[in-house]
Image (cartoon, rainbow, N blue to C red; front, side, top):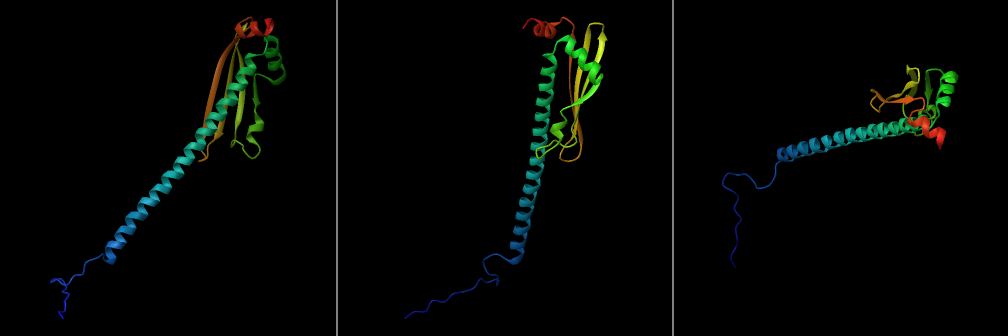
Length: 153
């Protein structure tokens, strides 16, 4: 019977991975996973901020449509009862799904005798604590298009 002999490499090194190679691979893998987690956190923050901006835009749009559906007399009454600058939509800053530090302001200013400029402004803090703002503005004229629709229809 013949014996088969197994020889080692002449340089004395064994084939396979060394502890140093394993450590380098683990460091690279940890860096990739760590950067992925940080990127995901940043992405979720941006999504939340965009969601709040969209929601606030809808709040301002709803209030603007409410203002446009008022007659000239109702707008005048609103100015006399609440003043030229008043707050609205306070309930969106409360509760479980609240918008952090939301302040929504309606400003009605006289431009001419029979014309007003209505500005809706919202300020809030995003999830990182940075203060943001959004503003809508429109003109409202006595016997103008909006006033005409409320009187005729």
